[in-house]
Image 1 (cartoon, rainbow, N blue to C red):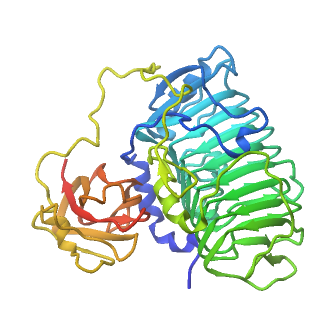
Image 2: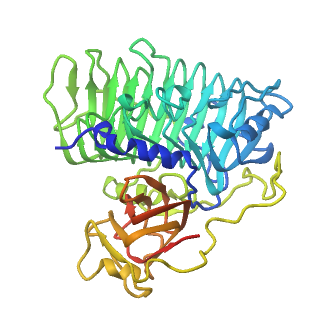
Image 3: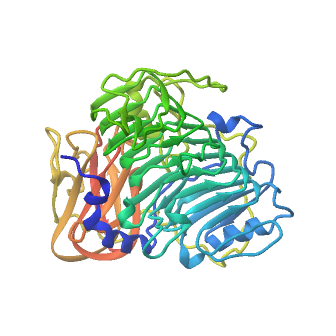
Length: 522
């Protein structure tokens, strides 16, 4: 029996919080802001261009993000803020100015417009620190990870929302983001992507939402029906209890999303809402579409979806599942152009494109991921640094030096395909490899006594480069997540003494082939 995310992750919460607080470095490629342009409802109402045409600055702390906002000539002066590093409570303070209204416990985008925040270099990780958009318009957030934002416990931020929007928000495009928690409300978390109090013309695209009790909502109560015109496309919802999303009033368009392990309910259209649900792939989930937990019904138009191992509950007074044979009970007119990938290829396409650190890859509408060509609105190649450091730190993705500690160590894993061996990842031979039985699995390197490790290098076999998608690096003994991100290569994290380290592949575009799992002390 599948257990809700809050229960399944409860035992690991303490160790994951410790790992998050240390500021894990994720290996991510350089990204250009808004390379392919906004999509979906964010293109309506005048469009969403963010900080195009304005100054570009670099920020490595939350305080510097606020300084960049406050240093503009006015609250609507366009600006692109390139962010690299871990942004947390320790480096985020309130900054005052005529063109901003900031706070110390969140990234505050309040009463402003024409702003792009984009992760670059080795990636931007907002650790236990949420992004709050209030009374603002024309905002782009791209290529960032926001994780473990809490509304209770310590530290708290943004009401527990990874990204939250409220009070007259217009035209927001969130793209290639990774939004994740470590449990549900009882563990202190709320929604990953919330919209309320008159928020309209929003698109969430090519993003990953995972390990949360609540994916997100549109409308905070049955009477909050002023929100809507929201597009969700090419996103991965994984290990979510409910609200994928919850929609109260308004219109939402969901297409080409991969929903995996929705534990209690998925798209919850209620209180007069209308959902257009096209060519999505629902997998290993329960009650993926319908009206749930209320007697105030919503409606849906469905087409081209695949339901793979989906279970449905019985209808009741406050429960109206769309299945087991979902049929349309409304019609929805979509005002923007879009091209649908066939639902059968959605898991592969989304695995290759969704989330931070994927190089802003997008689908061409023919089930083929493409790397976009930077356009004229992209940030200048030589941004100014508001507070430059005298020396740049070494790049954590540089090839590691020293001894590969995996040589002569032991290894094991969760599953393996025929003809491969766990030992092939620690033999120093790139012509041999280990593969999981499917597209996901884990492999470990282990020693007879505690060994200090601060970097690993995952090397894919020839011909399979780029197959590995999302991953986690875990201290097997404690369950602590040392790093998470996307793609093979060098992964750095604070030095830790352990006897067994595990590389978990949680998403891939095919069957991965790990030729070497190298480990290094420094």
